[in-house]
Length: 228
Image (cartoon, rainbow, N blue to C red; front, top):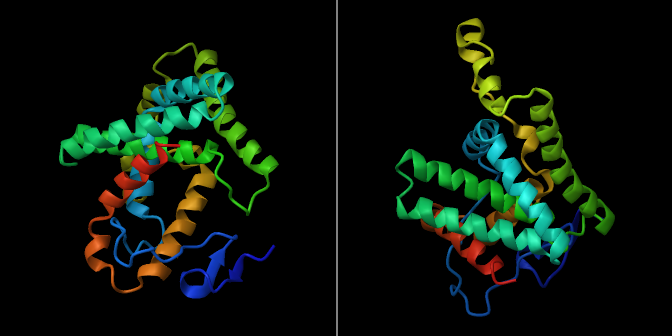
């Protein structure tokens, strides 16, 4: 199927992988709108470093989510999105100005991406079989991380990796903290990018105010998904 298709029923007459945005039933009714272009490099960078530092906790989350999906249809999605929402509200309550609040926000972001990776919402670029494989990969890649920890007989393996990391003095300005971009759910990131592109089409140059208030749109999306 074509990547981009024309459809007069959608904003900009555009759909991407058969996904598009429609006008609000009452113009201006929706809140949380923002011109969102590409996924933020600042956010992705911070998230990948956060993941590298918190692998044992993330493994615990996904291990429990896997058990939930075995006992209840869509149970892993419901667990992950609810936990994400709770942690996001903690971050919001602290105003995103403390280190704890930033950690809550990054954990909420990661869990929301995991929820998007395992959900049952249609995404026409991938077949049902490909979506199932992506979901399995998410659980498998963290299961492999658990095996690596056990093989090293070290419960603080992530700390060990940090301590043995490349030295800043050896790499100068090219040094960075340990990061695990490879553990960020790829299908979820791809879907987020499409959402951002569609928002840019919808709001064009009229969303400067809402772009600065994007955080509230994120919160609204979490609360909406929680109901399903």
